[in-house]
Amino acid sequence: MPLGEFALIDRFFRGCGAPRPDVTLGVGDDAALLECPAGRQLVAAIDTLVEGTHFPPGCPAASVGHRALAVNLSDLAAMGAEPAWALLALTLPRAEERWLEEFSRGLAALAREFGVALVGGDTTRGPLCATVQILGSVERGTALTRSGGAAGEALYVSGTPGDAAAGLKLEQARLAVADARAARYLRERFLFPSPRVALGRRLRGYASACIDVSDGLLGDAGKLARASGCGVALDYEALPLSQSLLNAVGPELARELALAGGDDYELLFSVPSARAAALLGELPAQEWGYTRIGSLRREPGAVLMRDGSVIDFSHCGFDHFASGR
Ligand code: ADP
Ligand code: MG
Image (cartoon, rainbow, N blue to C red; front, side, top):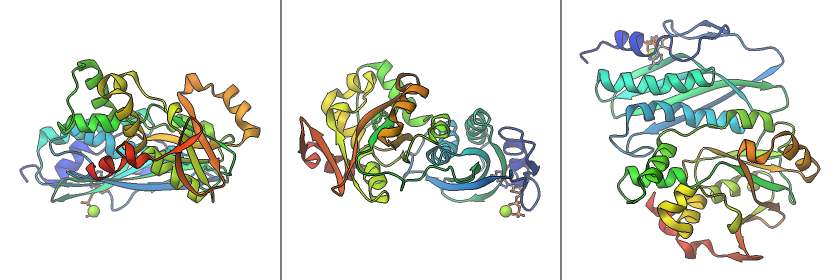
């Protein structure tokens, strides 16, 4: 590598993200020393992005840096936790300064936005791959989990699922969209997702269960329901769709992408009826950007309802999209 490993770490990753008083020792030693807050539980998650699997080859470096952290922030958001520290294991085919500059800029901007300090990592040569481990904390006993839901509870989702899946198809040139503004918006939703950390933290005390939507709404709703020991029914007509997605692909494909697309990094959560009024009062749905899309129910499995009856999702393109990813 023309740029030595130590020079690379020093230039692009030392002091990356937000400065934090609880980092006693960050990048530069054999390991980081972090001060764990009293009365809180440590929350840890890790996710890997592999070029060609989790993002298309040639994806902008700033997006790879952003998404490597964003997918992890989204996991902490789903737990209702506050992110604090991150570690980065980066594998690069070569040390290209411009690429690294952009990558670290994308990562650092999101880290600063969420008050996260990059406290260590590892740098190796090989096929492009970025793994981020995130650490954070939550007040003891208050974390949201997938398993706290119960039959009869309302199910909500934040944002407008399906946008990122359309954005990915645009990036891959597997979709052509005449409306240039819509195309730009959808691309942005894939390249620079917004992890719902603030919403996740505020949902503690209201939501009974929560999961972040990364693999498609219907599948992730099924995961939450299964973990909660019940099933789920989603309302086809209630799916919140962005105007850009509707303009780009029309209502049928928009719903398919919303249900099966993935890469949304929105929050899906259940709320017991006794707490629904408080939730809607304290966190107005319009302001916080979430929508009721269904209910947990006793019958196991995830189904889609339209006009009061179950519709077979496989007949409207689900399999096509599941295998097309
Ligand atoms: P060691 O050989 O002891 O594991 P390294 O040479 O791998 O040390 O790393 C030196 C320091 O730089 C360590 O503090 C490590 O955490 C940090 N580091 C290495 N790569 C990265 C990276 N991509 N991002 C952030 N910190 C890194
Ligand atoms: Mg090392």
